[in-house]
Each structure stands twice: as structure tokens, then as C-alpha cells.
Image 1: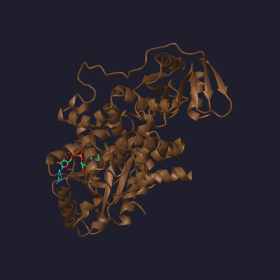
Image 2: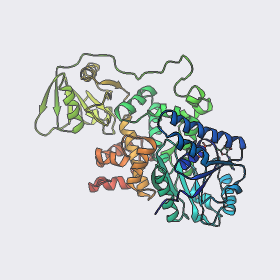
Image 3: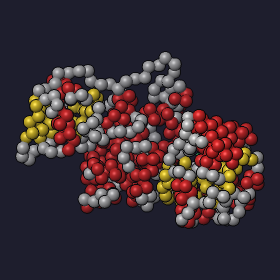
Image 4: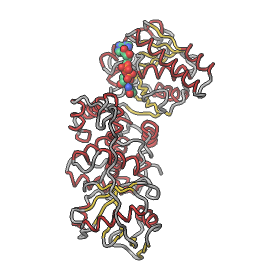
Amino acid sequence: MSAVSVQTDVLVVGAGAMGSGIAQVAALAGHRVFLADTSAEAVEKGCATIAASLREQVSKGRLDAARAEFTIARIHGIDKLADARTATLAIEAIVERLDVKRALFFELESILPEQAILASNTSSLSITALTAGLSRPERVVGMHFFNPAPRMKLVEVVSGLATDADVADTVFATAVAWGKVAVHVVSSPGFIVNRVARPFYAEAQRVLAERAAKPATLDAAMRDCCGFPMGPFELMDFIGHDVNFAVTRSVFDACFGDRRYEPSLFQQELVAAGRLGRKSGRGVYDYRAGAVPPRPEDESPREGAERVRLHGAEPSLCALADRLGAVAVVERMGGAASRESIEIEGAHLVPCDGRTATRRAAEEDCPNLIVFDLCLDYASTPRLVIAPADQCASAALECVVGTLQRAGLAVSLIDDVAGLIGLRTVAMIINEAAGLVQAGVATAHDVDKAMRYGTNYPRGPLAWADELGVARVVAALDRLNEHYREERYRCAPLLRRKAIGGRKFHE
Ligand code: NAI
């Protein structure tokens, strides 16, 4: 299926943050673009913003000056939709209200040619609901850009129940022709990105609610250990808690109150207090003049051990043992290990499996047990998050901390919460991704692509599952489920099937 030709006139309705960005993208790709808004001022401001943005790119040497001027000249602000009657692709980016968007589509059906595609940039409304009552619902599709549209690569192409497959394919090819990465999605709450990303925020808030660590420590863990570009709290501050809370609520409501998406009281309080994040000067963190950004709580330097023992061949333990080998003698114990661990002066350091350290210490009758969290790459991580069992002697803990520090690791000690922060978050993101694939909302390939390009996650969730071992992810979810006894941590049946069958998402 091919993209709409560059001769196609494109109508963008809504000249706000998203509409002006989309108009810029379409014009830069060579289309004549009509930009409309109920507010003439918004159209004027939108056109001015586009011109300023393109000229800024020229000044930075990223865009040819003549191309920028041609692009600006191709955008026509209009004050009535009838002026765009030649357009065969219309993209709406107006206020996020179903009734207003539907009224617009009714009007567009009567103005635009019969073959015109009507696309919506909605991030939360059902595309199926948008088409109800239209005479040509098969021509309506979601074309979900991300903010800022000129810079963000991803476009989710969303099909409602009535959407013609050819229409979705044309919009997909058009997005690609406009330099974007496109994915197909069946209309469902949050589409791919806003659905799969929910646990990124939710699990951190859950750990915070259990007072296991401060936000700055949790943010540092997700950045430094798991490779996310921003931590969950700083990202919510950046997005705005009002926006983030509204998305969570809308997914929660649209899924009939599924507890997996339950909004957090913590965030509700921030919104109620007007602490919306960067834009209001205060959110989780303080952005007012003179405020000092909080630092993660790293353990102060301790004495380390001269000798450690490696039991077993588990990859994360081997990678950490290699790092410890630069500062200590590592004895690699042969034979089958009853517990795979790094033993430091009688204390056992083990990878988190979803259980609390306290429970595991009791079950394994090993009081001096310390769990460490998931890292993207143990050979290079600058930080390790650990939690000791309640039974662990403080001298044993201090020696483990000191030994890790000698190997150059910053050590974040958090309270003994099940699944720590990285493992539980990544496992839940993977679970969500698997659930979408199972429900036929998107393919595993498109889910991974969407999360890589829409949120800059370090791995696509399902590729991450393959890398970690699907069975390990399932085991962590089952232990979280057992720990909390809440349906929130129930494992997606497809994930379990892959684990039992020993299959990967990307074979
Ligand atoms: P905005 O508030 O910046 O702009 C909306 C514009 O639509 C305003 O200029 C308003 O005057 C105009 N408008 C309202 N009703 C209209 C109507 N009936 N006809 C013509 N113009 C009308 O909003 P923003 O952020 O650009 O969002 C627009 C759409 O894009 C929403 O559906 C939103 O959910 C979606 N979206 C927003 C993202 C974001 O991060 N801001 C990201 C992805 C999608």
C-alpha cells in the first residue's frame, strides 16, 4: 500500500501544540497544508511557531534555508473549513472531547471529497466511538503523533472496528514517507504506548507508597541500572501530573476499573495541590529558583572484603564477580550450587527473583541474605540497588556494601520490597506488552517498536523478555502476585504459555 501522493492537500484542524507540529511535518514532506482552528489567534500563533521552528533549524545548520521558506509558504492558515475542500487527508488535533471531535468529523464528511481520509490524533478516545453515526466510518483512522510531533519519531496508526484496512495502510505508509516510524494498533485504551507505559509510573509510586526509597533514589535506579532515559518521577514532573494522572484515569476507566491500572493517591494529592511538575515550579521535585535537586541516597563508603566466593554460573552473578575480581580474590566454587550467589564474609548476595529478601532468607534458612535488583548490563552498571533481609546482620551488610563500592559501584540500599524497583517495573511492562499481543491489539514487533521510538525505552519490552528469559519474568510476576494477592500482578496467559513452552517472542 502506498502513501498519499505529495500532491495531496492535507487539512490539519486544531492549531495548538500538536496540530501545528503535525502541519509542519506534512508541509516539510511536500504537501500543501491548510491549518484551521476555531480561534483565529491560534492559527496565527501556530503558523508563527512553525516558521520560528523551521528558521531555528536553518540557523543550526540542520535545514536548508530555501526548503524552510518553501515549507512555510506551503502552510495556509484558514478561517473556515470549506476553504480546504480539496484536501483528501484531514488530521484533527482539537480538544480531547468525543462530542466535539465527532461533530467535526460530521462537518468534514460534508465538505471534503468522498475518498478523503479522516484521521484523529486523539491519545485516549476510542476510534470506533469517534466513527459512530458517520456515513463513511471506514475512512476514519487514528494517526497518533507524539509531542513534539516534528521531533518524536513514532506514529500509532489506530484502526477502529469500521476502519478499512487500506485506509490504515495508506496512513501507515504516509507516516513513513513523512520520516516517521509507524505501527499498527487496534483501537483499545491507551493504544500501545500509553498502555504499556502505565507500570513505569505505577510501580515506582507503589514502591514509594511502601516507603522503600525516596523518589531521587528510585529515579537514579531506573536510569543508571535499567537504562531508561529518565526516572519515573522526573518524567511525571516533565509530562505534568495533571496530564499523567488523566491518562492513568482514562485507561483505568476505559478498562472498567481493572485494578492493574489503579491511579495513585500520591499523584492525586500532587494534582490537588497544584504541584503539576516543572510547568508549575513544583511537582515531586522543587524547580523554584534556588531549589537544590535532591540526590539519590547512596551508601557512604564502607570497608570491603578481600576475598569473595562465586557459587553457580548465573550470568548477573558472573558479571558482578568479574567486576569484584579487579579488587578482590574471587574463588569460583565448582560443582552444582544449592544457592547461586556471591558469598562475601558469609553473607549471600543474590539476584532478585520477585520475593522479598526477608522471605527468601527464611525459606532458604540463610539469614545473611541480600538481594540485588535488575540491571540492563551488570558489566557496566554504575549503580546497584540492594535490599537486605530483616534477619541480616548489619556487619554482614556493611561488608557487602563496601566490597561492591570497592569495585566502583554506587550502592543504593532500599527497603526490602518485593521485586525491588527495576525487576518489578520491567516485569510489569513486559506483562502489559504480552497482554496487548495476546488481545491482538498489536504484534510483538510493533509493540517493541512503539516503546523504543515512542518512549525511548532501552529495549522493546518483549525483546527484553526474550533476553531476560520469559520464565524468569513469569516467576517474578507470580511471586509478586503471591506477595500482594492482588489481581494487579496477574500474569498474562500468553507470557506463561511462552515460559512453559520455552518459546521467545522474537524467535
Ligand atoms: P491544544 O490545546 O494545544 O490545541 C487544541 C487546539 O484545538 C486549540 O487551539 C483549540 O482552539 C482548537 N480547537 C478546539 N476545539 C476546536 C474545534 N471544534 N475546531 C477547531 N479547533 C478547535 O491541544 P494539543 O495538546 O495540541 O492536543 C490536541 C489533540 O492532540 C488532543 O486530542 C490530544 O489528546 C492529542 N494529543 C496531545 C498530545 C500532547 O502531548 N499534547 C500528544 C498526542 C496527542
